Length: 290
View 1 (cartoon, rainbow, N blue to C red):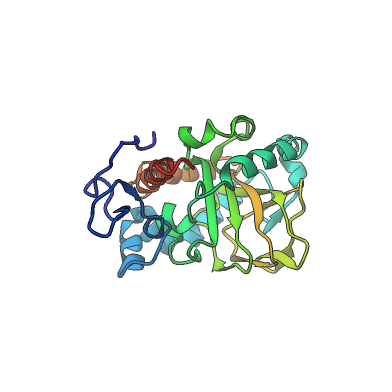
View 2 (cartoon, rainbow, N blue to C red):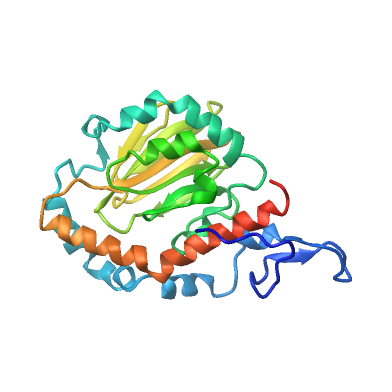
């Protein structure tokens, strides 16, 4: 599922990702992490938009219509922030939050194991601050990231019990990070955050529509990311949450619409590129014994 690791990868296989240790081009190739960490490239926003699935690029003009259909079929609230008691499985995360945090510290926060989200997801290159919003993917759009999941077995086992699991990753915000106002692509998905590391020397918060919310270690926060939202980490420490996206409980016709939308996105080149980027990153850092 992820890219294999070669003893000496070629630049043709992973363009721009590798450099030699010596100025004359000799010596072993090592990862060029300043390249794969999401450094801006001329034309990148346009390329990212062109690479998005048709249903996202052109469907966004009808997004309000489809979101209303999905919202009208929802078996849970359509509020910006939802009641975690409507999702009984969140108790599993709260019960085991310390074990999840320990795995995040031991694996995802070690060296360069977690790339910037802009590196992985074409859809985040316009909003993710370079190297300030990092991610360690366990699942992505219905695909298990075996290389990563096997390194965090407790966390992987727990998220795999989430009904309708779509994505799960450790979301890591550096001190001073501001993630600008943005929104998710479909009301067919709901997002849950489990607080793992929350600095207390300042203010770390998120605005969801007209609500300001804050994380607490060991607590879950469930929200609808199709509402405009933005995040600030105005502290001197990193903020780490386990981010889980899962399918909204629906009846038809909303379920029919959401299932087909997500099916198209999952099979798209857009998502396959993100999977390949994770594989390339993991292959690169393995060369450094991270």
